[in-house]
Amino acid sequence: MPPTAFACCASSPPGGRLRAVKTLVRSTVKIPPPSHLPHPIESLRRGNWVKLICGASFEDAADVRNLSLVYTLAGVDCIDCAADEPVVNAVNEGIDAAMSISMVNRPWVMISVNDDKEDLHFRKAEFDPEDCPSDCPRPCEKVCPATAILLQRVFEEGELVQNTEWGKLQGGVITERCYGCGRCFPICPYDKIRAITYVRDPSTTTKLLQRSDVDAIEIHTSGRCTDSFSELWNSLGDSLKNVKLVAVSWFRNLMSNISSCWHPSSHVVKRGNLSKPMTPEIWQVNYT
Image 1 (cartoon, rainbow, N blue to C red):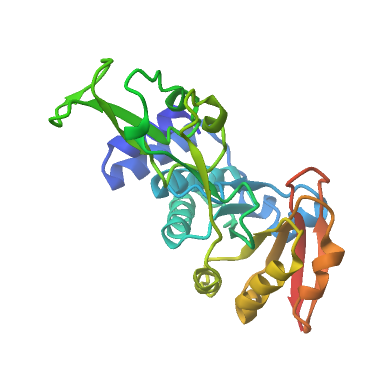
Image 2 (spheres, rainbow, N blue to C red):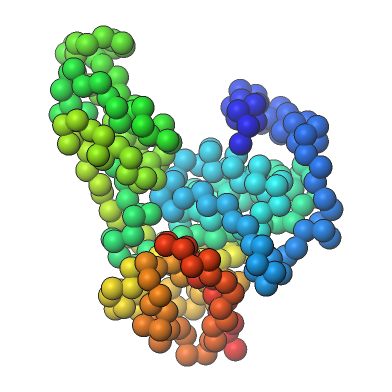
């Protein structure tokens, strides 16, 4: 996303931001009419499916909204985001803003979930800044691509002091911005940064799937324990009938192991596979 687009979105009132975006887009981008943009299913069939991946753990609503706006204007078929209500709201706000700017097709909204703690998409970095030595050069701040680490030095009395070598550090990981890329783990000279893994709550996912503005779901699984996949699938239950597409992402070709988990009144149609590590298979689940 161009820096100018971020600037106009961040520094203007809501109405001014939208007008600024409209001006920017219309002056630089020629957007074809909706009839020239293939429907997501048609894109899958043709093999030119394009998906914006906001990140299964990225929860900065403002950035997600801006990304969704820009990529909707660019004509993506799908926007993949965290299974978190404020994030889903932000995606749809970005889509609505884009559609008020130009006549583009509405992309599908896909939420990403996991069935165990092995998938690296579902982790956050964590450390206690007070454990950091006062002379630490803070390489974690420099290497973070999401600017999700912010450290400041303060005196014991609490007065803020920047760019000095004295005083303890405060701050740490900005949780909603961290998407668990792992760059900070090996670079910490004192080995203070740890990974916190988690599993998305199935009940929260079920509520999101019942919304009319959520179209698809991607399930991340290691495939090593099919019981966890079965448990998640059964927990989602009838809410899966509301989605147009189910994608399954796994480390190796284990679809034969988990295919028995599909609902007995459904059949699964394979839509595509790029045969790369951590690239999801795309499956459409049709209920009869």
